[in-house]
Image (cartoon, rainbow, N blue to C red; front, side, top):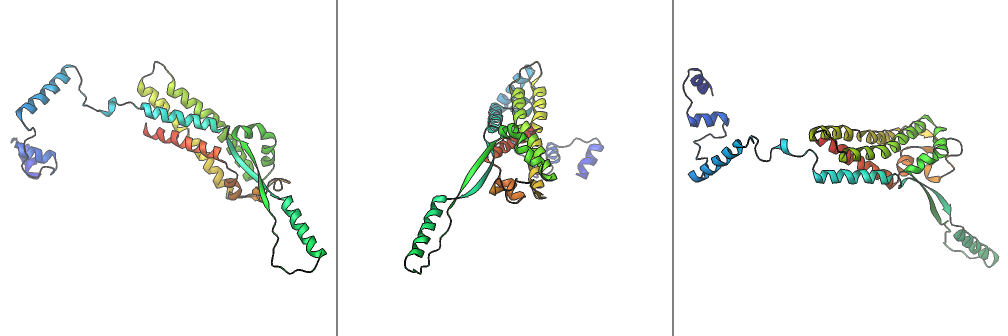
Length: 274
């Protein structure tokens, strides 16, 4: 390398083999072979380049500058994600239950014990167990907005953690209604702006989809701090337990809420690629 620099500074012409060795940085450590297989192949390639340049086309084939920022398949995936998020607002977001003792099984066990007491004394190893089942109650994302006066009132009258969680999930619900609509408008909006301007505008909008993801994670993190329920809330549903914690938080989430989270991840990830 030093010898080549000395030759260049002294004005001597670098040999072709040395030039390839210098440009390739040891890619061609030995003597290079012929680039073209035949003279006809060389003539055809040179002719193709001359025709391309005569048309003013100076970019190479498959240049990334000519590729669409958002392809048709990507547009379809983003559209499906937006539709799923919006429709999931009408699906169950929250699910709680009460454990109820089966009365028929309890009455049968009581009758069997009374029969044993009325007759002869019988010694058995039988153990009577209560039969229970869970009665579920669900609430959709839109239903949480409608019932903000009742369900939201119970949360807002509880500890600070539950109050903050209620505000976070309220913002999450509103974003689930607004962001998919704005993304769809940006995807199919026609105008005088160029393809690059439209792509950059879509990129900024897709980045906003990280906001509900951050809010969801914040709600999970807050649940680890714990909180006490307001008077009477803990007795409404047995699945809530006696105090608020991560078990009650994660256990009360239903599949509709998780669908919106997945849709937001798809939209936000595309914002990185553009």
